Length: 266
Image 1 (cartoon, rainbow, N blue to C red):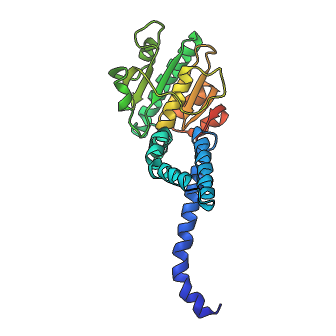
Image 2: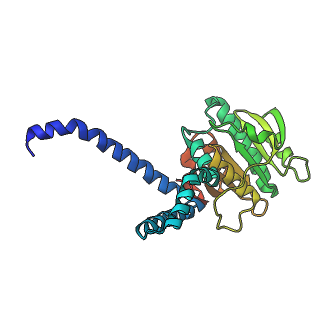
Image 3: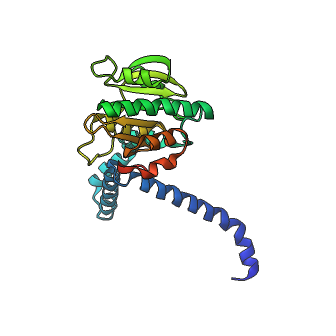
């Protein structure tokens, strides 16, 4: 190939090369995301169906080819329903960033201190609790499942809400900025398989919300009194109050010292 031919082809080749790299990267990230989830099993099933379809065409099996053609024609609609949790989670993560962006630096530390104080009291008392700190994705859809509130974040109020046998102690508290916007709220349970049988409903709900939104979900275990944090589909257990304070103050590296026990997100 001479220089003139190369110069002629170069303007036509580089857009194709960039496009191939982008598609390969998207496919790679998608496969990383679904590994270990039920979506991976469904994808393998679709691959098997596609192989059977090709074999049926080669063998001239008319009826089987027709039926598989119908499956693939309407399969896109079925896939939207089947993959709804995964699609919702993936779309929710687009543009995710840090937590508590709407709070000023001074208020952020104040809110962190109040939440940590409440977690410390609840942990020492062996009282179960779950607190979701809203990120960039609003949690308004979950407020209706509990009781709407508009109160300043305080350790006393948080501790009172989770007092056993109080009307709102079983649900989650939602925090936006320096305000409590909901209590007794029901959160979605994780769609992924959780191997650790010691994780209760609170931990599964914390994982479920962190899969759908960029909220930071704090959990106090009623059984072990340990503090856990769910973030981006991962659960970190046995965190200290200092680690939680650092995390709430805007430093995600605080999770590096936690024991990650489950999580399917990338």
